[in-house]
Image (cartoon, rainbow over all chains, first blue to last red; front, side, top):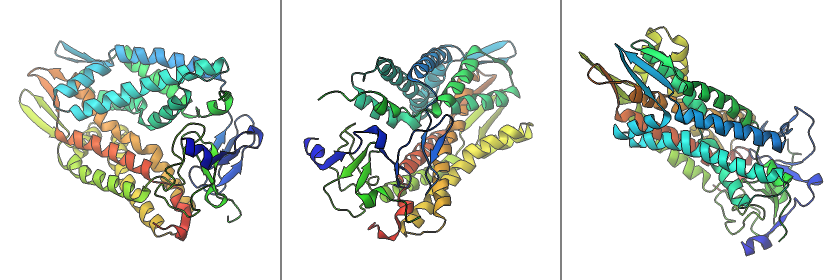
Length: 215
Length: 217
């Protein structure tokens, strides 16, 4: 990394004239402040470059804490119950993962555990950690590696797909069984709503919003 | 269009992890697409700086072809078995869609059909087309191709839908001899197909669409 520092030269020092490169086509732009609701799009390829940050660090932290509580509920409460001639059967997310493992579909169990539990949980904990310190105007311990990790796990959280999957499963089961919706499915519904809000948030704003540590 | 400056022409590199714009001092100015500048790390986040994703064409082709190979057993083999007192029924992805349709849930049948059949096929065809046209340096419909790539990237993970449906039904339909659901190998192949196609679309570098003939790949 010492050689790296010699080879590259940071152009970012003064954020007022910071540059912006379109990740989809490599076009270079000068960053400018955006008004409320404004989205900057690349003239060449139409990709989104930047958008107005409507949510403050405090608001994001509040949302993350909400999401954590809802996520906990979504994981410990059963999702829905099936009934067949007096017998009932319910499952939680982890019940589902364990059953898939026992039934010989370990690949599916691992995929579900990762995309529905470990990645979403890591994402929320890391975001909460980073935002908590950002709120106090500084960078959290481990800021850079955690920001990179957050960016990497971004596409691998699938809670919203699971919600749609639960709906499909309910409809399929409804033909043969009694179906009772349990609290878990509502928690998942609320979680999907929160995820939708977060979809428009680029956490990379924290690079600009927190001061660089003095070397 | 030619008046829009590109980072590669200005000797700039944007960090793909944190977005920092860096000046590329050393190294040659030719497009490489194979991570020639491995020695350079982003001064802000420490990630390796690359003008283009490493070996984008080779990696995307490999992942896409692997995904397509697994997609065949995913469709041919049954994904789950429903067993009741007097009946054992193996379901494939298509038969699951048909069942939803005939049971009167046409809307959900369409959603599952889109997620399990249309989205994976769209990914194979689109990424294949993007790879071929970009490797040829084609300037045909660049804007539309760029949009297509973003669509593929955005919808890709919804294909996991059917995998979660099978997992949920397996966990819930456990009424001993009366009624049971078991996962069958098709669902494993399908899950792996989704992961591989997601990795394929991540390995493709959409900037290659705009690079034109001066690439050496």
